[in-house]
Image (cartoon, rainbow, N blue to C red; front, side, top):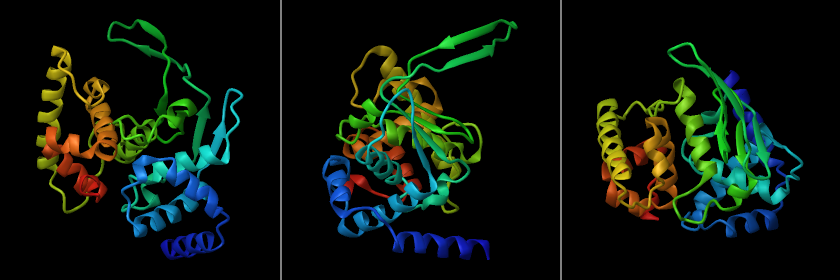
Amino acid sequence: MVWSFRNWRRRRIQAHDTLPEPAWRDAISSLPLLGGLSGDEIIRLRELVILFLHEKELVAADGYVLSGDMRLKIAAQACLPILNLGLDYYAGWVSIIVYPDEFVPEYEFMDEDGVVHHIREPMIGESWERGPVILSAADVERSGELDGVNVVIHEFAHKLDMLNGAPDGFPPLHHEMDRVAWTQAFSSAFDAFSAKVESGVGTMIDPYAAESPAEFFAVMSEAFFEIPRSLLGEYPEVYRQLAAFFRQDPAAR
């Protein structure tokens, strides 16, 4: 009953959408990332964006003025990974906070020796478990250019990873997927990539992927949508696992 009511409510929201067609066309044309989508995929992406903007709260921070164009750029890129999954994959949280540029959060943690450390580190994006997504508008503007770097997809991939707890590079897999195959593909690729980064070998994939398994999944998700053929050529098993998870095949577009 709850599920039926939610679907009915969402259909009404889509039926009465106020997303101007010219604004949507401008947003699509400004993102090469979306250039390979079929007509049907663009229609379904728009339907998801309408629901996303209705159910999520985009908030400007630090004096930034959040334009309609920026809202659409964030929403369209955030909805691309869930195009064939649905908005419920982003359930359990509401806010997206947008800073004009890098932001500097402060952290405090205690190490094994009981020493408390205070950390202040510039960031362009952050995702909190059961909390908001935080983005730098300047880096959102640079996303979607098919260069392998996309802060929106990166942070929303973390949100998918967090669906089953703290981010660890192992999101909840579909019932038809093999957990062992996922583990083998990602573990071997992570080890190989980390060794490559450590030795200074160049790669089109962001070296930040070597930071941890969680960051590896997020960066590989960026590559999957931004530079799919490069990912397929370099780490074909990772590509296949991501294609099964996202239920998309960007390299074929």
